[in-house]
Amino acid sequence: MEDTFYRGPDSEKQLIAVAYRAAESLLRSVNYLTPAITAELLGLLNLHTLWGLCLVLAGWFLATVISGPIGIAINVALLVYGLWDLWDRVRELYALLKDWFWGFYNATNDKELDEAGQHFATAISKGGITILELVLTHRAFRFASGKMVERFPPPEKLKTRVQAERERASKSEDQRSKTESERKTETDRTTESEQRDAERKRTEETPKERRVAQRLAELRGTVQGYGGVELAKDVGAKLPSLPSTETYLLIGLAALGGVGLIALVAAAASEDKKGRNR
Image 1 (tube, rainbow, N blue to C red):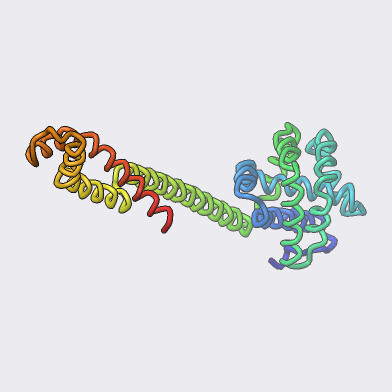
Image 2 (cartoon, rainbow, N blue to C red):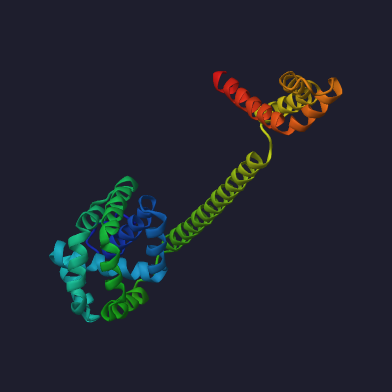
């Protein structure tokens, strides 16, 4: 890390240092991005694409914004690769990512690199991913970045960082998928349980229903054992010419069907009224 914040007169060494700060801050930006944007970003950037991008952006920034003797030297090197065809695209990216550019350029410690990463995340979440993709797919960029990566190979520490971020992103995605799967399973179980409960309620008698059924059975017995005879006696009183108790019973039994129905309806209404008054 001793060369990460280099600011000396060596133009190539400074280019590499600024490019590495750009790459490091970009990798830190995933801590502030949604999983979906992180996946899209890492899908665009492998080790060589990331390093090539940061070399080109750092070179452009030093040559056109910072300038001076170092800027002139770097500009000449970049022009050799025909990057002037890409300058308009890079200017668009700079307009969107200006805070990020100045953040990684001025960074003197890890905390400031992290802050630069936050600037990158903010801008990329507002549509910067589209402009970044246009830069990465530009013919001039692919040619120039490839040549620059050949001349300035990715530092070993950057290889380690890229691998670590990819593994972390993969684990996060696996965990997110697992969590969503578990949530869906739990939802399905809850739905099935609710359906079973509803079905049980439809098919099982409630305590109130059992009480009504018991009361109706008792009333039925009462009607059969007593009410029919009383009804027969009442009818017999009005018809004195009929025979004695045996005749009363026969008449009562004949009328039992109607009496039973009336008694059953009355019992149900009485039980329902009691339930409402509780």
